[in-house]
Image (cartoon, rainbow, N blue to C red; front, side, top):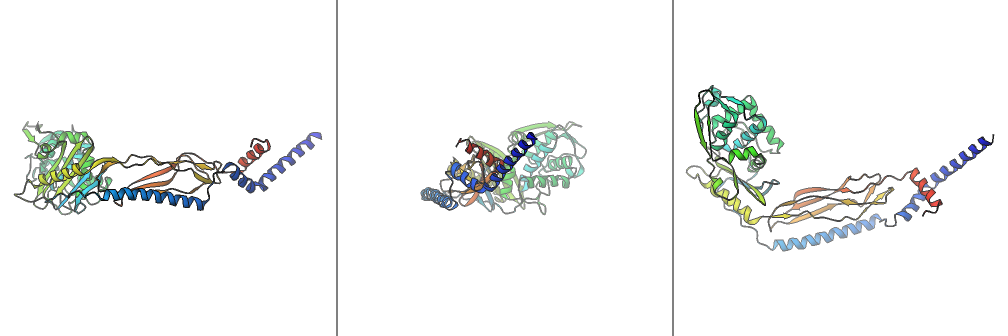
Length: 428
């Protein structure tokens, strides 16, 4: 009987304690905010402070920009091409362009994509059997014959060093089952690289309805291709010898890319010409501090064969003389942000990044911080809650996430009860 009375009294005490906790939860939370969150910031004050901080940042940037704008704009290169573009090969940022997004025929620069598809999807030790259709392709050709067999690796050098059209079709039929199947693979790769102004019909670039690209897309494809070591090894080879496997016919091909010897650091890439496309060329330079990709399309017709080299050198020189590698990422210390209804009143924010890129003195960098003035519990460490947008001449270049560096669980009855007990035990 005595045990039951004690159990009943304990139950009553526990019930009263819980009732007391529930009744006083709101006031206790407010008390907690005052006692344990003394640095709480009102929304209005925070917004005023944030506005003031953004204004200060804007003024600083504006002053910097005024200084930059006083500098003379770099002199634009005089070009002969109908379409031309210079790209930072490390981040695909366009540095200069003339009709760079216009759809254009691209002749044998098509073979850049043909080569990279073959390298990624084929086995270089495969034996390629030549079809009658491949053998019927017009000049420029290796003069392969129907029924002959070659190692795929050997044909890759013929494709890129001397741009043989019959070889391109033989490779396409071997890898894709047909020219149409291979074109689908080429277009799938183009979409993967976000080249949406490009459509491939042939693997060799002979004039065809619906076969086009833009200088920008071709530069993106090329910047991707030069990351492949085998691609570079092939396109930078000066000469190559091989034999047909059945009858042993011997061949020797030599590199027709004169740009490899025109500028320091030149690594390629591919020439092209058709009656519709005119002279075309994609060039690349790789140096310690930069990788540049140039594209010239429709750069003259016979007899103006050398204009493509002139335009390419002017584009590359423009990039070398007017752009320097600069780090535009700013390490910013954010004030802790208040967490509404959070067991931890304030949590930290941070962001990280590396925006090391080629920049000219005339380009203005602007940063817009989107930071919340308050968060709601619960919050996990690493939650993305804001962003820093980096603009170059009002063009969005990067959007870097701002994330939480701590966690804050939601205030609950258990948390309040523990606080009550601690307060009663005079720990605070």
